[in-house]
Picture 1 (cartoon, rainbow, N blue to C red):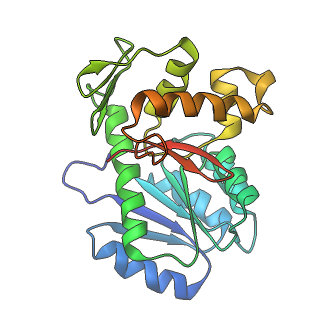
Picture 2: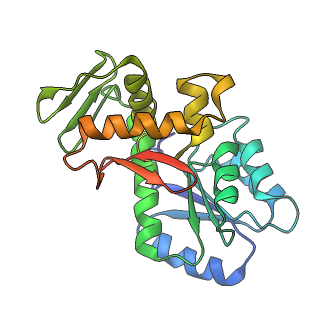
Picture 3: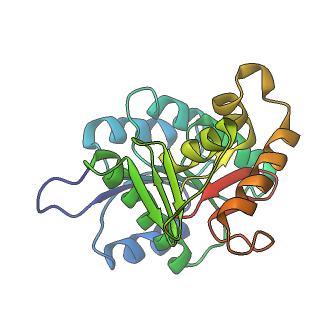
Length: 234
């Protein structure tokens, strides 16, 4: 989904705390976003279906239905980026939100700069999905060409095993988005391997040795502790 020609991106904020709305509204409008608001889950679902926002900011602790259910229901018809903003900071809560279909997760309290950075990543991911050159991603010295199944680092071809390539390709298709352990295991190894998290640790370590300048301090293949991994976009 991309904004209509000439129109500023529309952000739907589904949040019931007045003080949070007072914080978000000027922060978003000051960066050129249009803002729509909903204070319950049901109202948020209606607004999402009627207004077709470019981004959704969603609090999990809503007064009527849980934000996880809101995420699942929005995901029934649209892939609009959903960024969860929540006071729930446990790893299990983050995993549940991401597995329900959210693109990213920020724990309250957070700063404006962090929020805007996450929004920019989400917007770029949407733009890339609709672009003709979406099959190629370049981050620093890393270039992944999904169409040619070719990976280079600093112009040199990286020799990856089939599983290493499938893992990197899944991260590339979702660059900037946190992918949970369960998601990656299901997509790369299959539904019967969702509890084999040690597979991921082994293969991520192998990828970092082949792709990172300093595997001990990765800048491309990033860990979200207890949650999953993401491929950096910048």
